[in-house]
Amino acid sequence: MTSVSAEPRNTDGPTPATAPTGGSAAQRERRRRILDATITLAAEGGFDAVQMRAVAEQAEVALGTLYRYFPSKIHLLVSALAREFTKDVERSAVRATPGDTAHERIMYVLNRRTRALQKQPKLTEALVRAFMFADQSVTGEIHEVGTSLTTVIARAMHGAPDHGEVTEEEAAIIRIISDVWLSALISWVTGRMDEQDVEKSIDVAVRLLLR
Amino acid sequence: MTSVSAEPRNTDGPTPATAPTGGSAAQRERRRRILDATITLAAEGGFDAVQMRAVAEQAEVALGTLYRYFPSKIHLLVSALAREFTKDVERSAVRATPGDTAHERIMYVLNRRTRALQKQPKLTEALVRAFMFADQSVTGEIHEVGTSLTTVIARAMHGAPDHGEVTEEEAAIIRIISDVWLSALISWVTGRMDEQDVEKSIDVAVRLLLR
DNA sequence: GACTGATGTAGAACGTGTTGCAAGTCTAGA
DNA sequence: TCTAGACTTGCAACACGTTCTACATCAGTC
Image (tube, rainbow over all chains, first blue to last red; front, top):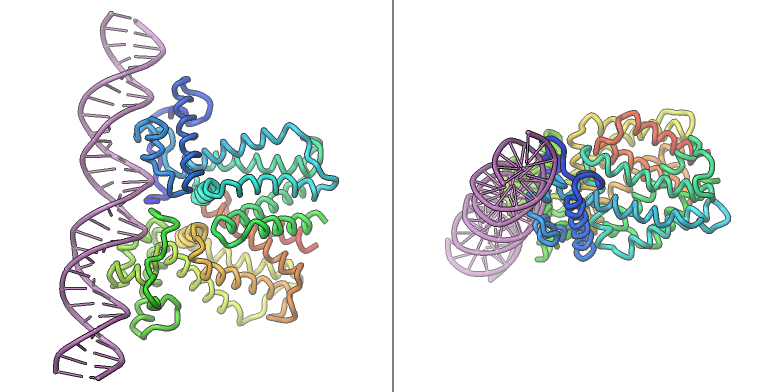
């Protein structure tokens, strides 16, 4: 983490394949390979194992190219996180959430997601660390993650998918739940909470907020 | 940030002046100089400016000595954070918190602290980043910060200093408020929220939790 | 006063994120 | 087909966290 607030190198015209769409087929393919390599390395060895040279090698691109696609390790990891997260959300969008109360449904989706993360502790460590180190230049990717999470919780709250508007108050509650979740994940990643602590802290928060 | 999960180097016997107390006078003095230098550099240039060589130079100790006192940059910053935070809490413990309701009092103390942090954005950036990057080996220092914050909020909640026990539910509420505060600070540090957003998000959380 | 072990110093060295550069390759348009 | 310009590549270089080595100093003990 030599330079947290380093300027992106891409100041020249349109960046190739900065967005998931756009660019030539070869570029989209390169981008995919890079993100795949990132996830693989992160899953194996966590944040430290995601070394730019290693990612470049495994993705079969030059180091310079890697930096052209993702201006920093943080961007790379946050983009990978965003991709995985969005994938997950889309996957879970297809079926209705079980549970009779909003509390039950919210706990269901959050626990489901939490457990998925906990099954790959190294990967989660890498992604959470990156998420927390991100600065302005990654706002877009982070916002994507935030939106995904909000959507999931809102859906669970209402029971039906995309049924009805989200009120101001509900939005506020969702934001707080997200905060608690993030905070718990941080504590878990940094070894200050175990799996049960995470579930419990979210459970308490949801209970207090939904009463 | 070469090695996030690196083992501390100090495996040999009792570390000199790892704790604020203990060690010879010269050691306590060195420790103080190191933390002072850390705060100074962080206040000027943020996380990136806290370079181990620079800290060592400004504190007038050798690089090796710096590492003997603090096994990593993260330890160094978190220790500095803990010291400043505790100082702050002690300072604000002397007078009663103004405000007629728990909500008002909690907002008063949190906003006070938030504004203090915002007056030194670089310093805050450095400290928050370090806080979030910390792993198990810094549990002690982090717990210290958490305890300080909890104490302050609990005091504000009750109005009187250390008056009465904190119930389970109150403790849970305090934890959630802390989570929201941390999360808001992260967003602020990373440029995704401005000052007003921070205050507002805490205000909403406190309102929802204390009803 | 001399010995010994812990502590401190100076500085080289290593690893990894990041940048710079020169040369090759691919693509769209003439 | 040819060419201009964008994109890639391979590699060297740099910065900074961290570790290591060799030596100096200091405190306590005999």
